[in-house]
Image 1 (cartoon, rainbow, N blue to C red):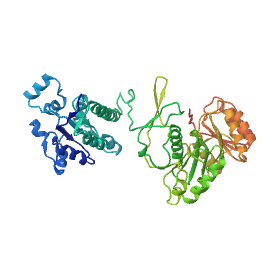
Image 2 (cartoon, one colour):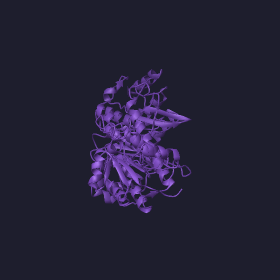
Image 3 (cartoon, rainbow, N blue to C red):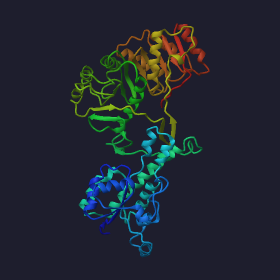
Length: 511
């Protein structure tokens, strides 16, 4: 098909920014413009001659503007098939002029929900006319070009300048696909909002994430990968190469772990393959990093580091001595940034205070599983002392710290700690005994004395063997969920060894 000229356009947009250059091209080529309300005023301010939709339809906007464009003369102009003789005759009979270009962006429903606005305001941001215009124009892409968002204005302007205000079929098909993507995403957000508390709320899953960011590859080079979502809402990337699939998985784990330490003392965590190989809290960020690194300086090589305070110059100097992939911080001091930017591929992320999703979703077999994120964290007030000896205040502080780290470590896991410092962990083992032995071996390998340390387990002890091994290594207090029919065996072993044990009643498996 030859290029098809644009002779008329309907423009009705919520956001007017970025639109001026496109309007200038349409004016230059004498395109007849139709519009409504605020958009019409904006176009006229640009010096464009505009026909009000009300003049086209012979009917005013009603119900506070809820109904403006829903009329046969508008939708007939968009949907008439130029190659069908019957359509042409009907259009002439009913005086319905063709509309070759539709530019519409939708009311900001998603943004209104995110703002916490009252329901009445949210409902008013459910676009009816706009989404109908987009669907009609996208359906008739054989004859109509549809522009469905302000992020397309520049590209469309360049296209029309290049092709003298005409488009090819493939151009129109591409923008039609984008319009259907926009309407599908929009409808998904509306369903997820309106269905809350209804019978459909938990019986139908609708997912839509945008934009799509192609990754260099997936988990391995032979796997393709794409991230769906707006990373810029959560991070400002200040330096380094594009985040990879594995980077993103580790960053996700790092953000979840550091959420446990958002307040209070400076904290630092170093992760490798989603598990913490070093976590510490101290009076300064410099000391917190040093103590976290001391936990396992071998595993820290090439890892992901996250901190809960701005990175100062002294801490940056220490960090710069280590090869790592990603550093995440709420801010970077002016003097610290050039130091950390000295390695060109090092990724520096400034984390923004954004509320994270409450649901966790994963593909599984031939479907999808959804669950609540594990947001529960136990404090000392949740500890139930089950042994003759209660933990000391210092041990209790260490147990709270260890339990936080344990919650974010792959099962089966054992975490060994002192107040404010991870000493070692055994992660992802098929046996809890193996996890404990791995943790003890690692702690000793990096020079830690376990006398007086504490232990956290992500699940109960079905046998007293772990307690006995821990006691022999010098562990003095244990935190675990409890719930085994043989809990008393572990409790008795603690009493025999003079150890304290507390139970939380909450399991934190992490598969």
